[in-house]
Image 1 (cartoon, rainbow, N blue to C red):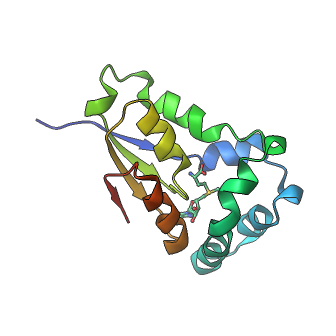
Image 2: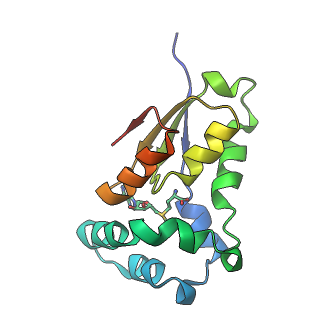
Length: 128
Ligand SMILES: C[S@@+](CC[C@H](N)C(=O)[O-])C[C@H]1O[C@@H](n2cnc3c(N)ncnc32)[C@H](O)[C@@H]1O
C-alpha cells in the first residue's frame, strides 16, 4: 500500500506575509542571497537566535501553525500521515505538526545549524 506523503513548507507563506524584513536583518540577507551557499551561511548564523526573533510578539509569526493545520486538514488520522517538512529550519512546523498528533515527520534543510536545533525539538522521524 502506498501512503500519501504531505509536503509542507512555510517559504511561500513567508514571502506572501511580508515579515518585516527591516526588523529581521538575517531574513533581509536571506532574501537578498544570490546562491545556495550564501543562503546556507546566513541561516547557519541565524540558527542560534531564530526562534527568539520570529517568536517575538511583534512578528506575529503564525506560519508554522497555519501550515500544520493545512497539511493535516484532509487527514482523518494525523498519526498515520507521512509528512515532509521542506525547509524545516529550527523545527517550528514539526513541533506544530507533532502537537496536532503527527508522528512521521521528516525534515529537510540546507543549513546544518538549523537542523541541529530542529533535532532538539524531538518532533522529527528523520532530518537531513
Ligand atoms: C524562513 S526559514 C523557515 C523555517 C521554518 N520552516 C519555519 O517556518 O520557521 C527557511 C528555511 O529554509 C531553508 N532553505 C532555504 N532554501 C533551501 C533549499 N534550497 N533546500 C533546503 N532548505 C532550504 C533555510 O535554511 C531555512 O532554514
